[in-house]
Image (tube, rainbow, N blue to C red):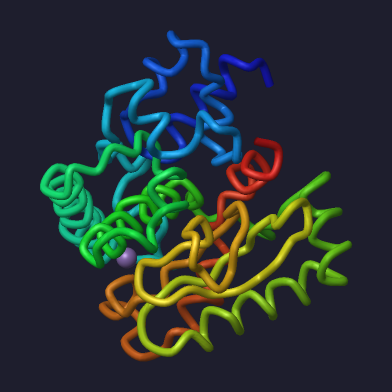
Length: 254
Ligand code: MN
């Protein structure tokens, strides 16, 4: 992928409009900033000084209709989830970023310093980012939906088989007590499965599971209750039908 395309992809893939352009103008590699590398320029203080543009989360169009994922995820759930829950997280975190005078310019910087910030920023910032990521990881159902190529090889290598991977991932989602997310991450090139509570994610400096998110499933009741009620495992089983494996592969390559 050409650098420009990859940069554009990364920028749109995580749902924010911040200082990427400004840092580019100053010669800072935006890719380093986006992926949270530990170069001096990616620390919150320096980037804030260099760009002067605090992070602002935005909500992008879904990219498909509310009913596109049916019957696996119903249209009413998608509509409420997108227009109420996600919109709410974005507006609250943007308010809190302003109120707290936070100067980090990328989600990666924000999450890498989340332990120093308020619960409002943590919960709503996680909610804003996680859902943008989640929407992009879904697509209309595909028969025999499965990854291919290098991603499938990596999954087979790490978990034995695609079925074993799905079993472990589903168990992480079903076993998360209360509200949270299950994730597939790449931790220095090693694939790992785990879960996080509430709206935490693996980019947070104090998360139990750390790494670059490749795939995540929202297991809050609001993500499935209208259609599945208490049957979270059934929601997870059907959710596999709508995973956008192309998106997951792009995260692995990015
Ligand atoms: Mn949700």
